[in-house]
Image (cartoon, rainbow, N blue to C red):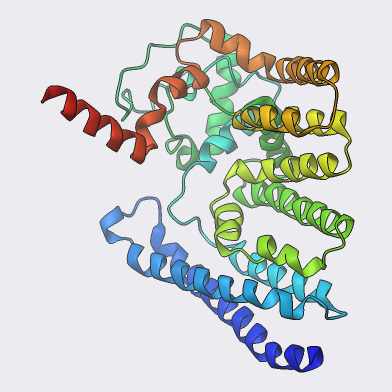
Length: 361
């Protein structure tokens, strides 16, 4: 019976993966229409959304096939090859609806050249080419720190190397970088591979992507689950496009978080807490996972308290450059974000408006 199910599932699996590949080819061909200089109303947004919806439906269909095909001897190749094909198709495509990576490229250059990315904002050294105002809800205090003449001269040279197509497109240029030190090292690695290159940055993200897959395979093996279940991650079209095409730095978090789960499953508490501190130095929000992690550990209260102290010390050490900047700098990215985070929180904003209207009744 199992062999019959395998046989019947093959056409569906091949058709599904083929359709995903076709959709990604369409996305590749559509990507140039999202040129940075093109107005939003002139971009093929409906076509893009339609393709991504179709990709999502196809992906969920493939996920439902995993229990059927999981016992196939060559399932590791069924897992890996389709995901590689999708990534190869979208890797050289122009970014679709994204410009965050311009800040990554700038931060990476500043860090790689030995300067502190938290000391100055791009606008501090490039006032002549950057806008003087920011499109956010409240004003930002001017930067209290000003780079010295030597540093300013060096950063201006970096800007000249980058060219206006990069420096003029940095988001929130008057705000100091919000990205923690481990992220800055990743940005710098991309710069070292090839300066000012989105492709080099994508290579860094792809490395984190592959590391995540390998850790998931180790985790599945530990729980005696078929490796094909990693396809839930590896074939995900949204994860692929947002990482390989858009270049979002969030991918750097995933191997850290999966490593935390792996060490937790092995009851290696100290390693799990250490990896969580690394994740916090990639992007700050994983710190909120400390409480559920500690509560889930089968340790004595004294040991748990020691682990909290251990996490705090490691995190503070890793984040110290950013913390020091935020302490005295009004334009520090962390401070600005903490004061204006509602900007993209549509549900919070809606609730706040409703409550505000009710209070006026």
